[in-house]
Length: 191
Figure 1 (cartoon, rainbow, N blue to C red):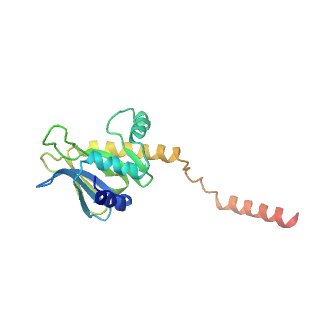
Figure 2 (figure 1 turned 90 degrees about the vertical axis):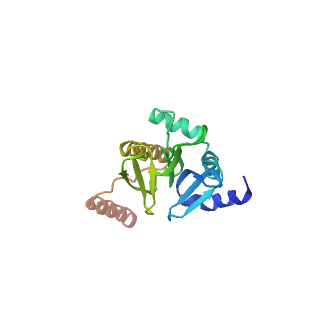
Figure 3 (figure 1 turned 60 degrees about the horizontal axis):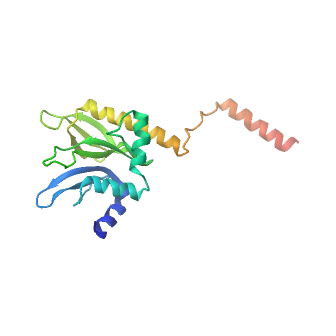
């Protein structure tokens, strides 16, 4: 991997909306990186290498992540990959491989999905619409894509819980807050 490619990925890691395996005429098998703005970048490396490098940039051990969250979902493949609270990669079949060993899986950021539409008849059975307006065609049916997104929601909840995030406590009713405030004032100023 060239230094230029590594710097480019490091510079955009916080903006990743999707990683898509893509054949490019004249360049072969590579990865299209779709940013949150809708901008598309080309990496002349296979998607596995880009995904691994992105995980390393976030300090994430992909083997451990798959083991932990695979156990939660009771599956060993197609496990959503939480790299940070803002980037949870949902694996989806985004292309038909031309050659043995080529990847069919790509990754969509869970937080960047606006909607999932059924596609017209053909090899792509659904379209994942990102908040940027970019539509990413998927080979899976809409129902299957929605199941993967639901799994990503469960992974996100467990990930945040494991890393010390706690949901905000239910707010006290106004009368309870006023009562607590008056008791605190009384204790402070009267004693």
